[in-house]
Figure (cartoon, rainbow, N blue to C red):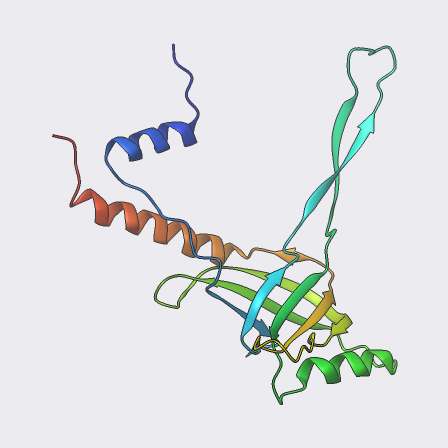
Length: 184
C-alpha cells in the first residue's frame, strides 16, 4: 500500500490536472504601523520566529535524547529600508527613544497579490526603534538615498483571518482552473 501524505496527494492530483498556485512576488508589500501605511519601503527583513528545542536525557535511555519544544523566540529584529523623504517619522521616533520616551507601536506587514490586495500578513507587537541608519552618500552615484530603521518587538503572529484569506484564494484559484483544464 502506498502511503502518500495529504499534501503530496493534493500536489500530485493538482499537477495531473494542470493546476498550480504561483508564489507571490516579494516586491509587492506594505507596512502599516498603528493603522497608518508608512512610506514606501524597498526591503523588509527579520520576519522570523522559531521554537527553542530543549534536550531531555531520560535516565536509562542511552539510544537518544528527547527533543522537547520550548518557547517561541524571535531571533531577528525587523529591519525596514526605504527611500529617505522629508517625512521624519522614523527619525523622530528613534530620537524619542534616545531621549528616554519609548513609545511601543503595533504594526502589520502585508504581502500583496498582483491586484494590490493583501494576500497574507503578519502582525508585530510592541515595537520600538533601536537603530536608525541614514543613506550612504556618494558623489559618483545616482542611487536613491535610503534610510534603515531597526525595530525590536515582542512577537510576530499571522492572524487567523490572514490564513483564511490565503486559503480562500488558493481554493478560488483551483476552482477557476478546474473549469478550464481537465484530464482527457
